[in-house]
Structure formats: C-alpha cells, structure tokens
Image (tube, rainbow, N blue to C red; front, side, top):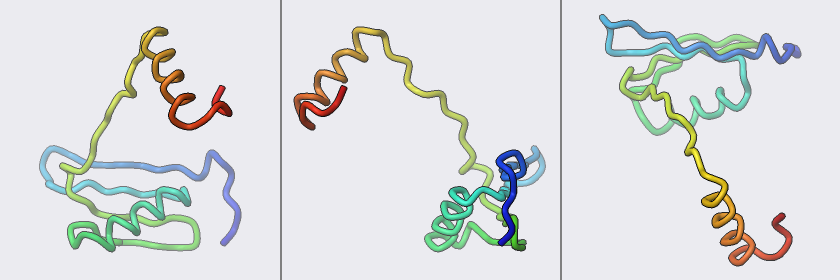
Length: 93
C-alpha cells in the first residue's frame, strides 16, 4: 500500500433524496476498519469497490448521522473531572 498524505486520506459520504442508500468512500484506515466491521455484522452494508488506497461501501441512508458533542459548563466539566479522579485514581489531571 502506498502512503497517502493526510489530505488525500479523505472520507466522502454521499446520498440523495431519491435513494435509500448512502455511499461511503474512504482512504482513511480507521474508517476502513469501521466499515469492514459493519459489513461483517450486517448484510445491509456492502463493499462495492476496493483498491490499494480506497474502499467504497453502500449502506442504508438511515445509518448516516450528524451529532454535536455534548456542551458542558465549567461547573459540569469540573464535576466530571472530580468524579473521574475519584473513580480512576489520582493520575487524572
């Protein structure tokens, strides 16, 4: 496998209003592993193309999600940090 630059190791997710499937094309190693794992668990995920750089998969469009990370106030963050120190040891800073 040849080395791609970080910019070239992209992931593209395509879907439209007419079809029930989405296409995921990735050159990112982590995403390739995730997609392979999904395909091994579900027949709804199919590998449609693979070469030395990229892989392309079809998946149900309903699997595609965009989710914002949880926003914490300083007080909430401090409570979670204190809890982590208590539960996992004093090495957490």
